[in-house]
Length: 382
Image 1 (cartoon, helix red, strand yellow):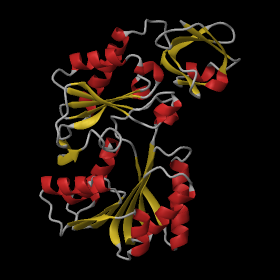
Image 2 (cartoon, helix red, strand yellow):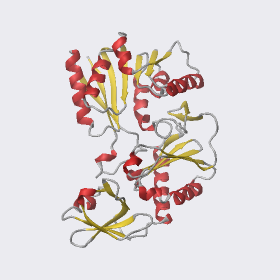
Image 3 (tube, one colour):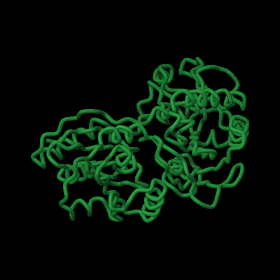
Image 4 (cartoon, helix red, strand yellow):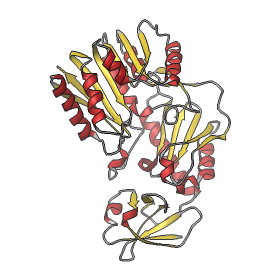
């Protein structure tokens, strides 16, 4: 067993529930274990936790348990079954795609499991969990008999763990064509093999439902639209006309497929294949609602720039749905500042009327704010 010795007083955050031990908190490391399992010991020699140790990562230990129980297939099976049971209570019947396991949020660090109908997509994002791959697959085959299991461990974060990208079948074979699922009762085509994240960004499901509730008889601009899921929710809510904008060719193909699946006329839903910033600089049309689901930007000022351009496209008394996901060191307070700067630049009054959150199937530990990866607001723009 690997023994990780902490520097003085570094055990407090862990005992309070934080699931990470950063490399700077480690004093020394003894021993070895083929699966990188470790026990963490305080500077006073007291047991703190068990976890996955990785000498290559700034997150030296990902906490698995504050107890001394054996970490094996049986332990993982209990945690996975608990995660499945929770989703059965919180995922609505009109939705067949959702997150089944959300890593630290479900006490399973480094493991992501997403359901797309009868297809399960797995990501192994840390070294310790990756070494339990066979056990994890076997557990899901027991819990979800008949499901195809596919790996999409191609996230950039694996590089920081010393892991190379991995993708491919784990049990069964994916169909050749895009798969079809439902979200909020809407039919969607999903590309599990190469699509965004594990195929489709499901963390916005509740926010898309909020748009559906507000879109009746409105014109809507959907920026960074990917496969058009915000647009589809707006249309189901009775939007008069929607324009979606995305520069990706695969996104354009998915939008076309989703338009066909839901029998939407291109006269009502127009898709523009163009960079969102270029579109906003070029077009002058104003909309009742603008959805701005931004990708992670390298520079904080880019969030202000995009919100400024987006706000200029909103009619007086309209709404801005603005959100930032997976943005390092750019959270809710920073996004709020970007919205305020955008309002000042446009000479508009901006009032936050509702927050946007990641869907409930993306839980995070109360002591782990890093588990919150989506920040957003619905803003009334006068």
